[in-house]
Amino acid sequence: MAVAVYPGSFDPLTIAHLAIAHAAVLQLELDRVDLAISRSTLGKVHLRADTVAARVEAIRRAAGTRPWLGVVVVDEQLVAEIAQGYQVVVMGADKWAQVNDATWYDGDAARRDRALERLPRVAVAPRGGIEVPRHLLLDVPGHLAEVSATEVRRGRSEWAAPVEPTAPDT
Image 1 (cartoon, rainbow, N blue to C red):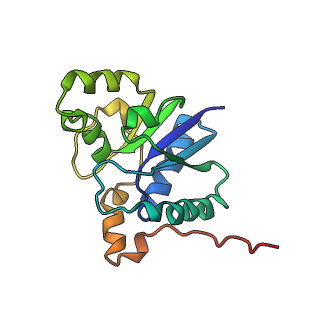
Image 2: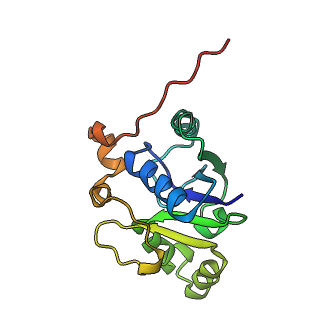
């Protein structure tokens, strides 16, 4: 079974998150993509730990009609640590830039390089003119590059992911 991990805050889940995960499934012949939410997301000071359950539930509802979509909650913060045990790691170009920035490894370029060496196959969705090696790029509709969870929180509801309501408990 080929499974990828797609780390992110998913605050909230957007149409771009779902399209990127689906593109990875189709283009890389994956059985599943797990959206990974860290209990303490690196670089996202606005997130509170008490929102994890709500974000997980939104993904579970979205997965109700997408059998290839999963969700995991992790304690790790660095992508290289979250991706351990997966065949593929999926991310947007902004995350790719972060993964390559030694700042996130206490300014230690050697530590960053060791982390990059541990990554499984990498698949990156283009975004905002950020340079990514061509062989890593996923083919994702260009209009999705501007979708952002920040803008959804500011009112761009058309970019929020459609999620199915959960069935009531019986």
